[in-house]
Length: 396
Image (cartoon, rainbow, N blue to C red; front, side, top):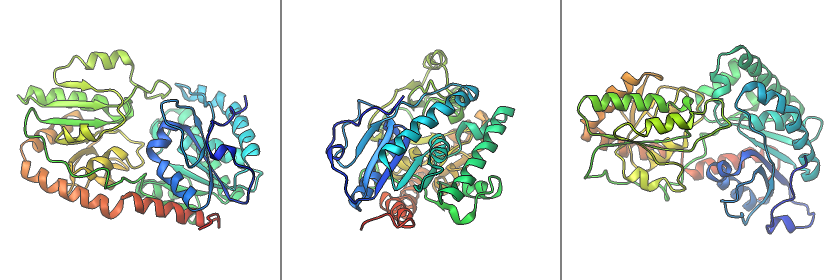
């Protein structure tokens, strides 16, 4: 099936011109809007004709600075199902490339990186593959997953040779992993620390002075995000006599192999002190209402935007000691790191932080300072612009 006609937008009505074309390939437009919209806007400002191909999302307003193409990605709840969908997806993206004729193809996340890289082979388009964490596929240890991991590594390596691809990682651990395990050439690997955060939009918030102590999780409802670990840890905490609350903000992701069944979410919602708030468009009020942000992921992280937003808002954090989390959460400086997969260790850390308000205040200030120096949006945008300049692709 061909990509659907572009939505009505000022960019879509332009006639051919001499601008360089930058095509972003991403599965979900809502994710692009949250994580890479600013990058697209900056690219348009520097002279690109920007097109984004993603699954449509009618809840998002039509962008003014770039064109959006509807690309109906298929989703599967299993690795085997995803393998069967590979060829049809590849053909759709190949047709898209023939239609758009981009100078640079920027693939966002692992699935678009693999399919986009394969589709671009045999063309002269330059490729950027942003791997925003290796997710469930590289966390899974099944035989099928290990085969898929080897295939992904081979495709990414081949892309560096055929399309001069740059591989963008979000944390130092992933950077080392692709060099040592995936054997990607060092000169093609770049480190850009996540999506950045607008520190004028996310500003320091005073701790709540009334009500119970609140912990907040901002994440999709996936097992790999450690939601079940946090629920068990909070039950442990309540059993110690605390009247704390756990608020989990995120949406069900039915097409993800790590998705938590809605029936189990409904069961957890009945646990005293546990609230599932669903997906929200603005997380700042939730952050302002909490004392500490949790991120108990089991692995597969790039650089969690939830932690960046929490840190920019002046919140101490408790996170699992996995890739990505370690970039933002520095033990005894901005928060606490605990062993992944351990409700007991998480409960201990939650118990400790409730009783140490002075440390929370110090860590809140340090967390924001760390974001401003390393992860502020303007830093990330300039790093992307520099990346495109490597291809001689910017106009400004």
